[in-house]
Structure formats: C-alpha cells, structure tokens
Length: 337
Image (tube, rainbow, N blue to C red; front, side, top):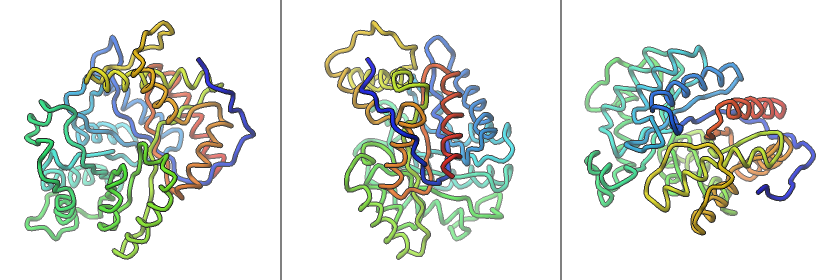
C-alpha cells in the first residue's frame, strides 16, 4: 500500500558529488555470476551518466550477495570503464592482513592510475560460521585503528616493508562508519562515509561538526560522504514498490538469519508482524518518490549533514527500473549542481 502523498515543489539539491555503491545483489532464478556481470554493466551506465565514483562491497558467504572480493571486482569494473573512480565500499579490515590489502590496491592503482579508491570498514562476518572461516571471532580484540594505521604506513611508504608495485601517487582512503567510526576517521584525518540509522539521529550534525574539528586538528581535510538507498520513479507508490524487494530481504535476514536473493514484488506475500515492522522501517529509511519528493528529502539531509558527497547504495529486483532510477537521480543532482 502506498504511503501518504508527499508531492512537493521541486527543491534545488545542494551541489554535491554523486556516486554509486553496488553490492552485486543476486536475483531469484539467476546464477550468482549474473549478479557480477550486472555490477559491471551498472558501472558502465553510471560512467555515462556522469557519476563520480562506483564502489563495490565485501560480503562473505551471503546468499543474496555475490561480491566477496572487492579488489577482483574493482579490476573488472575499472577494465570496462574509462574515467569513473572505482573503489571499495568497503574492504573489511578485520578480515585481512593490512600488508595484503596495501599490495592489492597498489597493484590496482598501477593498472588504473589515478582512478582507485580504498574504503575500509570494521564489520565482521555475517554469521558465526563465516567468522570462524575468516579466523575472526565476534569477541576478538578491536584492532581496527591500529590496522588502519599499519595499512596507511604501507601505502604512504613508511611501513616496515615496501609495498610492490611502489605507489606513484596516494590511494585515497575512506573510513566507513555508522557512528563509532567517526572518531577513528577524525583521528586518522581521513574522509568518512556515514550511513545507516545514524543519519536519522537529530544530533548527526553535531557529531559531524566534531569529526570535522578533530580531523582538522589532526592535520587533515575533513570530507563527508553520506550513504543511503535512493529510488526515483514516476510516483511515490512506484518508488515504494521498487524498495520492497530489498526490504523483504532484510526482513528475512532479521527473522531467519538468511539474507536471500532479491525477488519480484508479490502483492500476496504473507509477512509476520515482526517482518512487517522491519519492512516499514527499511522503506521509511529509503529516500524514494518522484523527483520533487527525492529532491526535498535529499536537500534536507545534505543541509543537516553538510555532506560533500552522496553515495547511493540502492538495490531492487527490476534492473530496468534500477537503471532508470540511477539516470533520474543523476539528472536531479546535475540540476542542483
């Protein structure tokens, strides 16, 4: 059922860079390999639309996501595009040795000079068996800040060993955060990518002001990327329908422990009360509607956060509708630039 009509006069969105995060979502009835090909095709389309970056994700042994190795997928995307920046949103540093990550991204930068970004996060594996397979238990010590510094030491040429190939330019690094990571990013004087429910916190502006002040004190230039799902369609009802497959998948994950492939919208789908609550929460945190509604909501968010960049992380079952939404969002942000 569609929500209340939120049609408003078209707002001018503050000028920000616009980028995409694609998680290589699998779709019911298709092999996982098809999801990876769709990711590469979406990157080609994003480049034609003028997006600034195209990032890929790291998830291990998740039925609904085909991307477990960002460096491999980054290489595939960069090889099929010409100038769009390509990177990770992100490499989950607790799962890797910092030296290996540095070597991977040094090699990517050597192959695709000046186009590679390295976003790093601290999330562990999705389930206990995955964490065990990654040799990382949930109660392991939090070494993220130290690992981040070690990784930077290799990329900046001040590590205990010299990474090969030697870097001819810095690889831009970003810290993925849902709140706690803001302090790590600030103390490291690195750009931050902020997403999740923290964006709805009325104090998020103050938290970001503190990040900026600490980053400047640490000798950096603060830079804020906000990441959230954005869907643009002919109407709010149509956009809501596009948001439902991802919302259903998240509802399933939180009630069964399995994050499934995307499925087409089924108006007769039976949900438990808890699942309905999750679906409404997920859809409610997705910016969705026609251009006027999306412009108004993005304008409010960007004003409240002072963000420098928007990283849209949207997924839906209908690939054609997803491509059209990407195009409409690009036109909308270009209009505000």
